[in-house]
Image 1 (cartoon, rainbow, N blue to C red):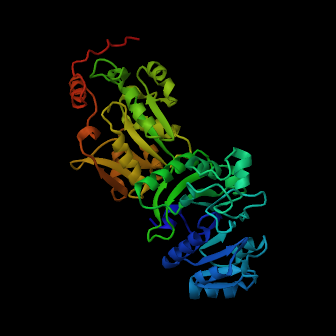
Image 2 (tube, rainbow, N blue to C red; image 1 turned 90 degrees about the vertical axis):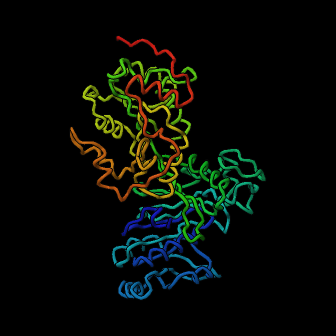
Image 3 (tube, helix red, strand yellow; image 1 turned 60 degrees about the vertical axis):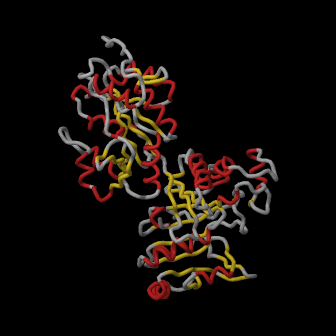
Amino acid sequence: MKLARAFGLSKGEVVAFIGAGGKTSALVGLGYELMEQGWRVLATTTTRIGVDQLDLMPFAMRYDASPIIMSQALSDHRFVFLYDSIRQNKVFGGDGDWIRRLLDAVDSDVLLVEADGARGRLFKALKPHEPMIPSEATLVVQMAALSVLDKPLNEQYVYNPQAMHEKYGFFPETPIQAPWVAQILRDEELGWRGAPSQARIITFLNQVPLGQHSRQRARTIARLTLKASRIDAVAIGSVRAADPIYEVQKPIGAVVLAAGLSSRMGQHKILLPWQDGKTIIEHIVEQLVRSRLEEIVVVLGHQADAVKRLLKPYGVTCVINKAYKNGEMLVSMQTGLKALSPRMAAALIVLGDQPRMEPRTIYKVLKAYAEGQGDIVMPSYQRRRGHPYLLDRCYWQDILALKTGQSAREVMNANEAAIAYVEVSNDSILCDIDTPQDYREERERAGLNPHLPTPPQDQS
């Protein structure tokens, strides 16, 4: 995946790079990407860079040139770096107010800003006067190099390690651990101080090898970093690779559709026993908890109070579909999507009566989304698509706009080009429970006793 796609860039943005472990490389790489797409790219620094780094730019000029001259330079070179002065082998940016004037005067498509310094270190904690993010920034890219893991916490590898020790007690010279990195990245004071309130924040874990062990360590950092509500996503990759982003981790919630009457079962099917003394709905929720989704919303209707009591230990959010007796899955889905927090980037749509749902299926779906394979990701078995499937937030409004008698399938069919299919090895994605026969067959397929007696119908 390219940087521009991973960052979700659109024309008119001001992108500020902070942190350590590849800021200049990321800025330059993004600039060339956008230039090749025909964008007019301006870049600068609010601090300073090495004079040798000017050689990486197609063209460089002073920031106080006239707008006409700058515009002509953009037409000629497409990617132009602006600076104030060069002193002692350092290139310095302009004063604090010039960026606003520049944006009003020059017909560029994007402005890229190196807004922090780290003296070549792999990781950093901000000092009180850092960083120097323009107030006009719409995106802050927070950098860190995964190669800092297992290095000793000292000034050879880390900028301002003392702050990490003073605030969190990380011992000097101790090998740096993944949770430590995440703790600093999500800390407003040490990780992204001064990010404008309107700006998105994306963390970029750079220098990640292709091996699965390193990727998993990066995912651990991403999962912990995303606990900061201001951080929108964590990109994982290596800025020097041809496709520099391997995957983008975002906060994802699950919507469990469990409101039905279970009229053909004779009793509430999600409360039927499954295994290890747990009911069907408990078993499904446990699989979602193990998948480490940011939020889980369970949509209830029939016998809602009983199910809520059962699910209380799991810390999920339960919401009620008041129209559950009409039997429309669409209303439950709409209810669940409305209940997810605004920071959720996508929703995993889960059936509450599909107990053979496998964690590896969830993993495949989430992985395909993180790798940018599609904005809608569906598991497929023998060319038949099933549940659970993932739906990017950009399609939620289309779902919410559907009326009685319509179904989510209409949105899927209208956006077929955006769907990525992941092949699974068995039919668990297709099989839900509607009848006693379904229940017995599903238990048998799961290797459980198909003749397990079921509890009597709750008459309350």
